[in-house]
Length: 194
Image (cartoon, one colour):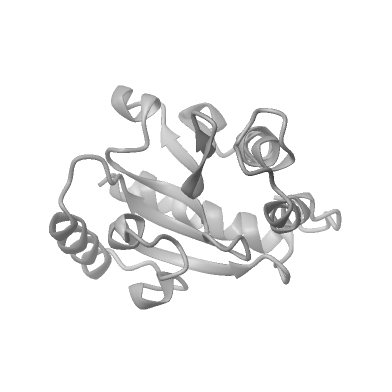
């Protein structure tokens, strides 16, 4: 990581999602600015940073999902799915992985280590995420799920979150901090493979 990089490209990309979030079309379409940011611009930039910083970019399928079938997702996300697990390459529904979760109001983003919310019950998600958080704590990351209410009204992502960091999109930290936080989660995943 180049600590002298003052461009803060990632910070600016994330901050710009808040601007286009407010002005997005009613339907999710491939030409919308928000779709391009979350599906392409941010994942491609993150992949290039992982490669540049020798963080094994080829080990991850960085997938941004703002919407499906013309509808905006309740929770837009950018997931770091491991390429070594075939089902996870296809879907973010299974396993545990680093992920950026966008609040439904578009003003916050949460860098989280989450369990896939696929076929598991809410009780399973709550118990498993708390067990992992208690057993393998990550200093500097929060486990208080009461702060995650802005994520989604169905709470599946809230229940599946093991720990997280919250960022206000109007006051983003610099890229050095953002990437350092992300790399902590990637290192955690590589060490603990849940």
